[in-house]
Length: 379
Image (cartoon, rainbow, N blue to C red; front, side, top):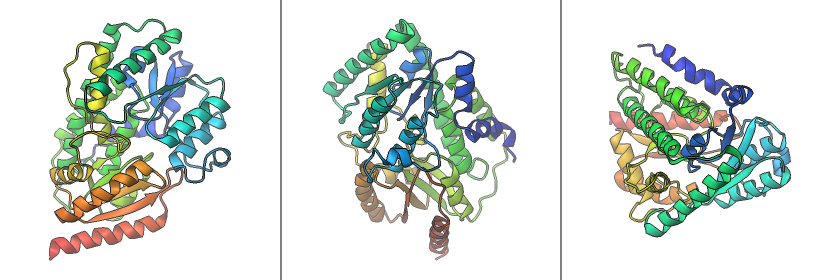
């Protein structure tokens, strides 16, 4: 079944990451760039901004290389270089979340070298469970709210509740779509799924929600494809700034049926919470979500969580997409590999640079991994 008609709007948005934002700014809407899924997007939306995730670009990073240490990750270098080149004049403000030391450094350099940019830094507690982190983060969100009100005007609680409701509906729709992807991988491929996910960070959530619901309806009306011989794989890691990495895996013989990427399922895996106020709800939501490797949640073992996700999506193996010099993800990689080995789940680790196209040598490695999984199934 062809779902091209429902995929076309998402592909149009991701063909030029910031065209939607440029058009919105030209029509008078304020645009807020954010670096991380821990940025309180609902608060930006309630303030009247179009929240747009800054994903960097493919290309050289000479200017950023002059300011950042050589061991800084490619994503950090890419976004800083683009800022220094003045590639985002349509941004009214930029919001950072203090997730790792490198991005904190980028925030400081961004503020110092682009003095006309309105830069906000949200301090997220490193430990995300417990009453103290919740109280701290609620107070931090109140500080950010007041800072936004200085330029956007009053942000009433009703507006925050409306934004919370919209984003909740969107997360529910995306989780439903991810579940459909696992059962219809021949219809909604991994490359298509990451395209839908990336586009959600680049356009208005209300419009994206409408398109996702149409896509869900289209997929449910499809006749499921016959199972193919491509082994089902799960992609783990952090950043994946464009669909090319997932396309390479599928072109090399794998069928991507699940992921744990910060621009993928992790951004929509929020638990429902009870709260006393909209900001308290926002704080509880972000602290209770599936954590980024830069944060700690008591009782959660990254390896066990990965094994459970792999089994849920009935994947045969795992491909790690590790951005070079991303220390938080690298620290989690060790217990994850140990848990996979204990569970008898094969894994392949790919080190990548986010500001470059996937190199062809990765295709050879993924093809060999796919062949190994097929041979294992046949034996």
